[in-house]
Length: 299
Image (cartoon, rainbow, N blue to C red; front, top):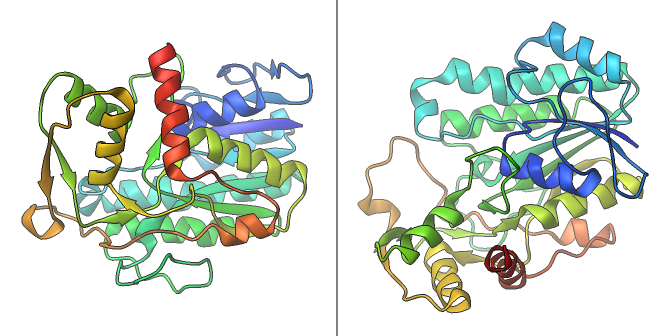
């Protein structure tokens, strides 16, 4: 399978490249997977501007991939409130260009969405058929990206949230969990929400599920691709401290006590039942966290 991956500097793209290949590649360079079954190209931002539709079509046409996997996103939730054009260019219109390029090339398309498309008023995990109700610029731009992606009849939109995982080589992007662990190791009190409910997503598990969906040619469409279970970042911090045998050093906070420019959904746990029905079971978040932290300790 020939795989074209965007967003190569992020945690999720790094996991996708590891799952399908061996390391990020420069634009035009094909990296053979260890098993010889996949070929991966993951251009970094400097090599491909995904907001340039002409460049996107040209690059995809040159590679002739079997699948285009978009991991790129504008994720600064608060900054997006004052940078709507940037958020829309990256999270919506670039997705439309990538989906169109993939369709023209006869390739499948994978795009990653977010829990922020929901308003957080639910009392049970959101399912794919639940109506979205975004409450900010970032959330709205991501929902538009979902819709543009699904205009491709062979597209998979996988909603993820609270990502954690191993960074790729040569990148400083680490994610919220790595920052939290580092602060606890330094004896600093990290602020953590006690009232915001999420379903964490381990990038290695998301990448594995992505590969399985594609290799099995599961029905295209929208899937919630998160680890099993619902929790808070306060509980994640406590479990990480226990696993690493660190003193729990956090400052508990709630959404109503923090001045944030963009609204966050209070309850945004996602149900991965549809993914399970497709034959892909996601580990519990506690198991995923243990695997991740064990890998960090070993390295």
